[in-house]
Length: 426
Image (cartoon, rainbow, N blue to C red; front, side, top):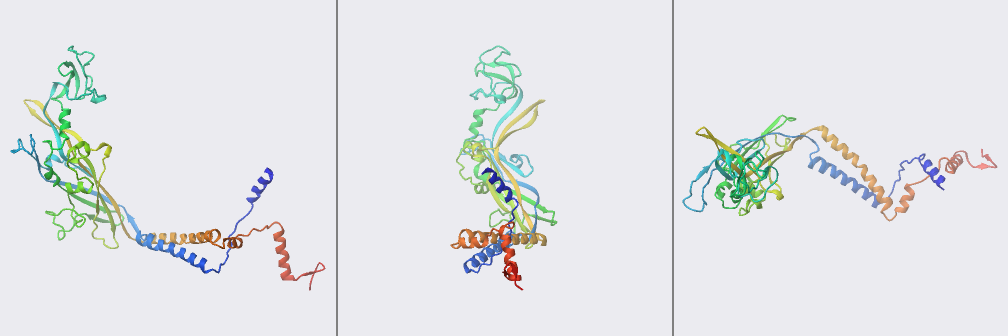
């Protein structure tokens, strides 16, 4: 039996399948087949060519961005609800936009922790740090007054500097050599609570405006566009971007955050308040330029989204301002929190070209063959007369056996006439 099975398998390799045309006179089958053809033609012409502009050649933009932030805010050394405000400090964009320009992004500081008048020397480590953290954040605990003891090995790395080798037995922490007084962890945590004095006055910060000038160039068409409308349509001294005024490139910070899904300013920094703990947002400028309709101007749609993870909200970093006092370098240390806005320019431009049109149309003609495949499957597998259609469409012949001999005899009979006693009739 195994040998017979192998023999049948090998012989099957020497067989050949050819297409057989069966003309079916059936209104049901005919309507079904033409409907399939019309659906495929509708997809090719209506969707692939017209809707998806399969008749156009496309190009991606080469973008350039310029951003300018405007607005002022103030901070006080005490709670801003108390009048008069103590030690008011007014901030303008030169103070809170850090750095002044960067590639495809802008950072706006809205909250900060200031550790002023730091100098190089030997200082107490931060007493508010509760746990002996590991690595570069490690704080060394001690009880000994001995110099350079095993508890405070000299020049070992601590949270805010290198160990000096001595211990402060009052705080039970090793002293450090570096910049001091050191930054307070308790003060940093207090900074991230709504209402802290170091936060910008909320309504003023929300009204900050961001001018985003976006020049794009399409090399394939030698066309350049800018997202700023003409002076006859856009007044840059007073306009603000909206869906109804998309030719104005000026965005309000509060409106941008709201469109990205953030509205609850009562939250703390840990809960995702970008004005307190910082946050990362994306402004996507998406172009879809149809140069067949208008090759003089093209304006983007604006999409807003918060992109820092809910598992780790926030954005902050440290920087210092340096000065000289009596030949001694003094540093004001800032830990800055704020909104980092990242820009993404996407999209394309399209223009008529005969080559993509022919390619799209040729692909559609090829898809018409799918109508025949589907119709054959329905006729032989689904319709009520499927067994009849299947018996007519599929036929198996033995070209090396009796089928061929019968065919030869039938052909001779039709051409030469029947045999009489083994002889052909004259």
